[in-house]
Length: 107
Image 1 (cartoon, helix red, strand yellow):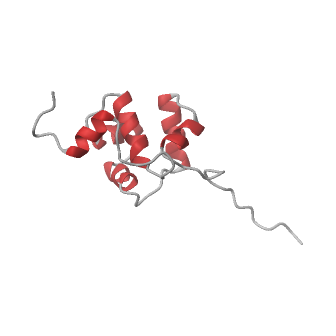
Image 2: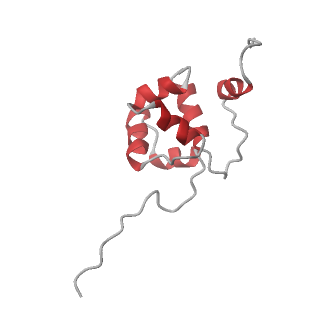
């Protein structure tokens, strides 16, 4: 039974729901899934798990910052979930996660 004091966001997190469709980019879906898997109570716990400032998690959750390739690799190494599956969970449908831009070679 849920406490009356629990916010709707907390209930959605507890139930693994974010209100996003499968194809919509939603990094919160990934953060929420990790929180459920590891029984984390808040974003601060998530930030400690990945050794980032809690503002990084907040900015990612509110789509003000993207999950960096470095953080994605940290999540993969910590959770043992494949990169492709992590990208799928958050709805990242780009062919490449990041591109390496090469400087033009000598002419």
